[in-house]
Length: 272
Image 1 (cartoon, helix red, strand yellow):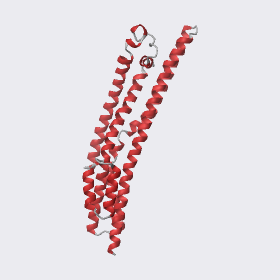
Image 2: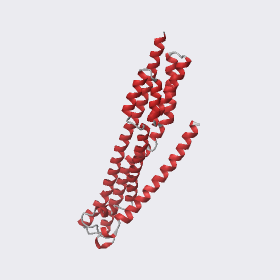
Image 3: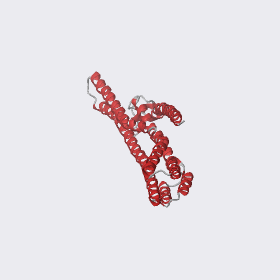
Image 4: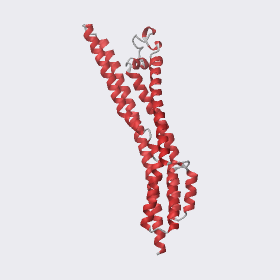
């Protein structure tokens, strides 16, 4: 059942990722062709002319056909970041996570397991679900009379199983964001290199050096690098932000699991 759920989630996530990637590149092409390439941005009213002074849309358009790919990468970072933010926020639950953890740990420490379970039901989310599974297992081993070490192993196993079902959803698409960190820079450099090749190739064909034309060509080529670096910078900021959030959620589950085990040990110790 759990494996089927994971497989269905994986297939659905893969289809979503593919659609988003294609859609972002397509939208990037439309922005490049019809917004940046609008004739009103150029001298003479056509996009084959020189960009109007201080018209950055036209300057980026002149970066060449690699620009739609770079715009697509930038849109991917934005879309997947919004999607991850929504998923991770939902995983933390309805109320403030720190406040919830203090409440649950206080209930566990005082032996009010039912209160802790009720708090998990109200909080919802991946963290609360994993902690609730451990609390239910705590009650089961308490009734069965396991010794402390057997109970610890059983509760830890239950937490691991619950976490394996809840937490992988948080890491979906993180690989795509991390890939865009490198892809943005590499695509930008590729656009710059191809632009430089064209610039110097045109210069060699013309024979007579035209410093103004050469400067414009190099400037247009370097736009790709600037766009790629901007995409990579945003991607690495969002990746580190979400990684930190996921680590916080995982730590919260581990912390609650340790509290449950210690509570059970105290309970068994009081019976001796």
